[in-house]
Amino acid sequence: MFAVYADSFSNDDPLSGLVVGERPDPEVPDGWTTVTVKAASLNHHDVWSLRGVGLREESLPMILGCDAAGYDEDGNEVVVHAVISDPSWSGDETHDPKRSLLSERYQGTFAEKVAVPRRNVVPKPAGLSFEEAACLPTAWLTAYRMLFTQSGLKPGDTVLVQGAGGGVSTALITLARAAGIRVFATSRDEAKRARALEIGASDVFESGARLPARVDAVMETVGAATWSHSIKALKPGGTIVIAGATSGNNPSQAELTRIFFLQLRIQGSTMGTRTELAQLAEFLDVTGTRPLIDQVLPMTDAAKGFEDVASGDVFGKIVLTR
Ligand SMILES: NC(=O)c1ccc[n+]([C@@H]2O[C@H](COP(=O)([O-])OP(=O)(O)OC[C@H]3O[C@@H](n4cnc5c(N)ncnc54)[C@H](OP(=O)(O)O)[C@@H]3O)[C@@H](O)[C@H]2O)c1
Image 1 (tube, protein in one colour):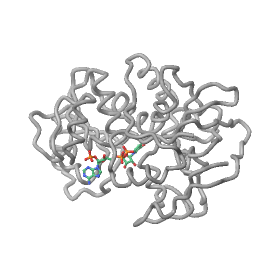
Image 2: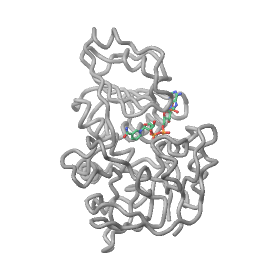
Image 3: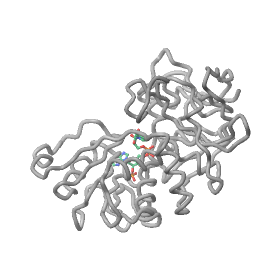
C-alpha cells in the first residue's frame, strides 16, 4: 500500500530519511481492527521520529504519523486514538509505562490503512470534516488535557500560551477562549501574533516580553527558550503545564528559588486518554469550535509539510489527505 515512512535517522538533516513509497499492508493482531485513512495530520513528533527520538533503529522502516480520521471496517466515520497501551493495562493509558504512540512501536497513520486496537477507534462527530477530525488525536488532545485536566484553570482565569504558532499552541488558544479563559500568547513572529489575536488571544506579546499582569497558569511546549519567562509570568500558587520542549531540554535559568518561594506547581502532561478524546470531540461539536488548519496537502506531497513543521513555518495544523 501507499505509505510515508522513515528509512533512516539524521539529527542534522531529518528529511533525508523520509520516503514516500510503498509498504506492506498492516498486520492485524487479535482484538485489532483496520481504519482506511482519509486524512492524517502532521505533528512535531513526526520530525522528532526522523531525528531518531522515541524510535529505535531496529523498528525501521516505520510508517510515520500518529493522527488519522477515516472509515472503520463497517464504513463508520472514525477518529484514531494514538496512545496504544498494553492489553493488560486498565485505567489512564497515559500512565501505562508500556504505552507507545502510533509510529513508535506500531506502524503509523501516513498510509492507506492503519491497524489499531479496537478500543482505539472513536466515533467522528458528523459536523467535523475528515481534515478537522485528523487534527484531534495528538495536538488537540494534548491541549485539551493540559487545559482541562492538568491546569486547574477555571472560566474567568488568565492563561499564558507560549509559542503561539504551533499545532498544540493554536489548539490551546482556541480551546481556552471557547471555555471562557482569558488568553495571553507569545510568538517570535509578528504575523503569528496577529493571527493569534484572530483565533481568540486577548493580548499578544513578543517572546520574553513583560506582561501587564501575572497569570493563573502557563501552557509550555517551547521549553528552554521560554522557561524562565514562564516561571516569572505566574501568580503565587500558579501552575505551569509542560508538554514539550521544542527549543531544548535544559533551560539556562531553571528559576528554582522562585518556584519554591512562590509555591508554583510544575505539571507534566502527555497526550490524553480515549475518554478525553471523546470529550474533546463533544466539546467541538457543542461549541462549534474547529481546529485551525494551516495547509491541506495530498499525502504524496508529505515532504513539503515535513519541511514546514521542521522549520517552524506553520500556524495551525498541516493535514495530509488520501
Ligand atoms: N507531551 C505530549 O504528549 C506532546 C504532544 C504534542 C506535542 N508535544 C510536543 O510539543 C511541542 C510542540 O508540538 P507541536 O506539534 O505543536 O509543534 P509545532 O507545531 O512545530 O510548534 C512549535 C512552536 O514552538 C515555538 N518555538 C519553536 N522554537 C522556538 C524557540 N527557539 N523560541 C521560541 N519559540 C519557539 C514556535 O512558535 P512561534 O514561532 O509562534 O514563536 C512554534 O510554532 C513539540 O516539542 C512536541 O514534541 C508533546
